[in-house]
Image (cartoon, rainbow, N blue to C red):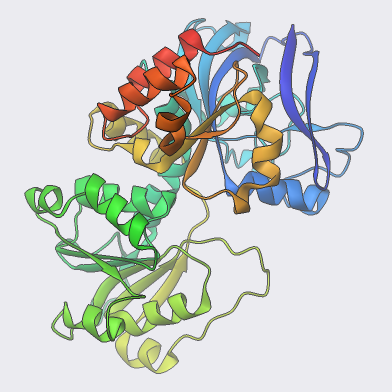
Amino acid sequence: MKTKAVRLYGKEDLRLEEFELPEMKEDEILAHIISDSVCMSTYKAMEQGSDHKRVPADIDSNPVIVGHEFCGEIVAVGSKWQSKFKPGQKFSIQPALNYKGSLDAPGYSYRYIGGDATYVIIPNEVMEMNCLLEYDNDTFFYGSVAEPMSCIVGTYHAMYHTKNGSYVHNMGIVEGGNMAILAGVGPMGIGAIDYAIHCDRKPGLLVVTDIDEARLQRAASIYTVEEAEKNGVKLIYVNTNTTPDAENYIMGLTNGKGFDDVMVFAPVKPVVEMGDRLLGKDGCLNFFAGPQNSQFKAEFNFYNVHYGATHVVGTSGGNTADMIESIEMMNKGLLNTASMITHIGGLNSVVDTVMNLPKIPGGKKLIYTNIDLPLTAIADFEKLGETDDLFRELCAICKRHNMLWNGEAEKYLLAHAKAI
């Protein structure tokens, strides 16, 4: 069977190609990809090529398919897995396989599986590690953003706290405590707000900061103070660029106690250091943002580490349990990860999107792999709709959903967009 896919041949060498997939083996699965969301990690793999920890050395002759946040349908199942999987089943995937200690992952390391493709061969190890996840939802894009959402869920689970005289790490944020999300209205920060408000272990106070007023207002219109209050969370948005003496103002919201949990969503030295200063006794700082600079450093107050038991953790991705939790919460309507998505496009737009990802504003870029469509901001639908029937209808649909991408819009797009 032929597939169309975006493959990585070397540093800054991505190519959209059509080629023949090998015959499926008895321990493999043939699948049809429908959607993939573009991750900054794919940009890093493109930029680093074989210097990336997950990318093989021989991609110049054996290129790999990129994309690791994907969702689709099973087409055929090898005999080994026929008791567990059936043709027609929808699936999502946890790319962090950790198979026999290897860093190999779909979207980085494999010739015949990755999210930016029409058809793929799912290798045996994905099923062996229980990383092929049944997805019971008629909207595909939620399955794509389940992977980035699982990274957020993992961040919450990685937080920990202690009690005086005990060496036990109590995992998770402090329930009913003070929490801050710094630089928190980008696509991943938005997801972290959503989870904080709707998970089963909520903070009492949630302060979200950023320096972009438009993004803060957009976040506040999606995750409102009123919605948070209904769920027992006092939510406060703060523009640290325009609020006088912002750090003291934020600390004052805790009556000087400080924050139990601080998450930093930008690899910016002053932001990390402010997060440290905001910590209260036994406060936990999670550095979520992955810096491109391998020498990125920030100061941390070790007086407070010694006498105040403050501490820092870092997370890079979630595990399978985190992804299952994300999917279950989305299926129950507890999370609306559509808020992370700001652009849509077809498979033909992937190369340019990945190559220029840091320069493209907004949040998640969602790719539908079977259509031909330039990467397009949802905010531009209305203007484009003046001359284009497809975008006119997509705009009308999105207006019914607070200008968020949604299942109705996905179905219309898949039915009416040009096939690739």
